[in-house]
Image (cartoon, rainbow, N blue to C red; front, side):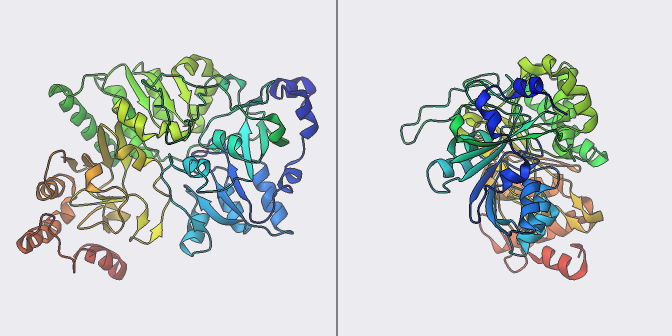
Length: 501
């Protein structure tokens, strides 16, 4: 049972005590057809109580909303809302199997967006207006400012732009998070001032979200911890990818294009990216910095190894073991970590300015370097493009990684032509699989194809892909293809269960 002193430490504006209500009372404020912004970015800092109450209400009083988040939600919230029939539209990212199936059946309209763009669409009136924001906070300041928890994502802008705000005060989130956030909103276009982030450690805004406290119509008290990271452990394949990428970076140092401090690092979430970052702990690099979206276990492993000096992100998403180690010692990391809104963590202007080395994961890659991050067989959505496009097009080095084989060898991740393009060949500098690395910089399409086939394709499929490319070259063209065979590998997989000829 919470006492008044504990609540007063979290809710520092006295009149807001009168707005404390149950999750179900808060859920009853929503109406059919509304547009709702909800906090949460890669399972961190998400609203936890009101969404479940929404599903409980919908069992007796059906209603549907457009739900906008930062990225994926934890605690099976997307599944629960899908099964309750609440989601009419969903954006800009998700990672839930139940919701994914509903999207692919056409029951939920999913808008897959670059993560830096969603708030811009709301701010400019292309999307919205936003009726409610439901955001998790560690505290509310004396002036009504919201102190975010383990993510910022889009929640800061949701709270500012929404007509009304429901705040979940999460008593399980450490108050030591206060001061770790950097909340800044770009000025209006077309006379927008440059975003003054000139280094990973730049702090340019407030440590809280400044909103009119009169917009806060409900305060809900929760004590539920974030969902744990669901990243799989590294294996021989991911370790091989990490080793090849580290060797490549060492080569860049020898060529004089980088020094041993590299340049700010970004890594998409996932076991491969996590393994790459973890591998840096054993390399010769030092005084590293990160400018990324998600700060994962490897971020804090690098801190503890003395390799990483500063990390900027939009969320902290950790395994249970890492969380148990990090959060009790948060004060030790606090002056070396900052969490920003995702429109800043992913902003093309800042990514280009800082010269980011970006490492993201591909679903499939074709022989010319086009990358599919989102669609199975070009039709079925997986999770979404996330922030990979924000970084890929604007990074100093745009690196895509994938295992060469999937489904026990039935699928080659390197194919003649990708069935859906998220990142064109113009945005891809380096491709890495466990089989090898292809440096595609300054190569023409035919040269890119040869580099990818000879270095990145698994031996089981290499001759098959050579044959396709050789016959395509006989037909001619700057980017040779056999259009009648370009998707034959995918068709064969559907028909026989394997891409193997």
